[in-house]
Image (cartoon, rainbow, N blue to C red):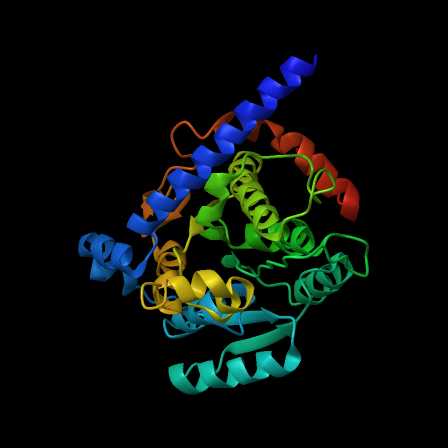
Length: 335
């Protein structure tokens, strides 16, 4: 038994090393600004010229970085944009800036802490009382806290925002998304970091030494697997589900959470607008051009797993994970 454990540990370590190495090489070639510039040679300018007047779009984490660029991009194309922000003060500054720059006054602030199930439910209740369709939900809000932090509701913070928060707001918005069918879509902003992590049911990283970067990668893997599952669950509801990777962008969040990474790649990272490009592209395209459940990068479908990284089979755990998420916030089963 001891020898078996040693062998398993060795194989697991090798897989981890391979994932990290493959991710580093793949990322440097594709996720940087140079990658965006190279891929953009295949972009079609007309894809981004669609107007979306009258469409209701919710963007979480919209006061800075990629979320802000997404909200601004949608507002500039005429959408009614609802910016979901944790900070009222920062949200109001961002709101004023977007209204001023785009000339679109149909941009609104919704204050909600996405790490709190209680606050998300309160927001969803308030928003549902408007009784209007939601055409686009962009799950952008994210957290990368290096140390274990527990929320007031007892959840590990990264998990609370990236997984439980994303799951809860999406599920609660389904009735309003159905009102926008067949044009409704949910776009979840994942990360290339998920390439380094298989799906695990240890959602709050209770086993082993906690690592914020690894937890973030695990969370982002869950988002991709959730998107797959949602596309199956709601395939007859007229809602499209897409996950995407914005590349390595120079945002306030990256500078704060990964200062050494930000410094090492100074001048090589994408702008927030370049990071938001595929989000806006996904929001504008006719749904027949998109594949629900897929993972997108730079306006194209992208692989969900790197070769030989041993992550593909792990997606079989998603049903168990959904059971856990549902029990944590007392949502009814939809499967």
